[in-house]
Image (cartoon, rainbow, N blue to C red; front, side, top):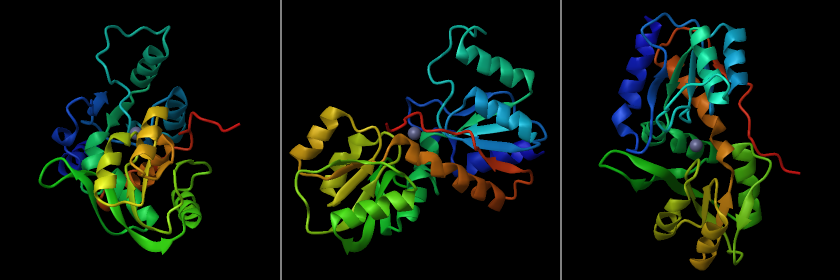
Length: 258
Ligand SMILES: [Zn+2]
């Protein structure tokens, strides 16, 4: 049964107990004890993604961000969340989430992003146990800041980034990255000698923290995590999951730059 093979894939590579304690991951709606007709992979679950799955004949949706995060007290169909749940059940769709366990797993989010950036000799930015760490730090050929920004935007396929810099360094040789909201690891990036730290969701006050420690920050947006879908599809294929797997075309960055 393909569903159980997918469960086995996650249990092996991104086990549930790898996730942070505050997180909510794994099977969220439906069951994996069934034949899988197709998989749609997306960052976030929306009604559009459900329509996409129905249209593609897929009965499993895998997302990075948890749709159910805080415990639900009720499921009401006059709310967006309630409607999503109703539509999932009505169409016999299963929802599986791999979030911080994916970030920390053997070929997870930050490994994917570090590879896109072409980081050499990269290692986890901060270890959480003996075998797993969050973020990545690694080397690139020395280049001026402007060239580094250009390289980062093109490698990650992003149109916009916000730069936080007090001084213009002579060159960028070491890049640290943490996909998503990784501002708390800026201190570790500084300690490990990164010339620039990339993450998303850098707040105003965190930007000031970066300036105060003379660390260059680049807010690449939370949506830079979009690359996970293609990487996960490849991994599932390599694991021998034998059903059509789709990288969602409906996944979207909620922010528009105007
Ligand atoms: Zn995220």
